Image (cartoon, rainbow, N blue to C red; front, side, top):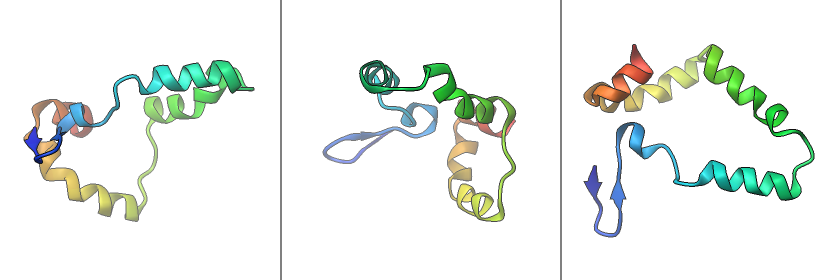
Length: 81
């Protein structure tokens, strides 16, 4: 965690989500969505479960955060093991 003067920046797994994001998306979907939630989320679920082939460009840009991932034990387990 780092203080920036106006906000707190989290590194590792704690810095990758906005509290309530999916609850808000689910509420918006309930009010305005046309597809079933399960169908809407299926591509993301499939990618999370099965993984995907990384392109050369993806591997290049993902390498910028590699030191931070290695420094955080939980991120190391989640993303590198």
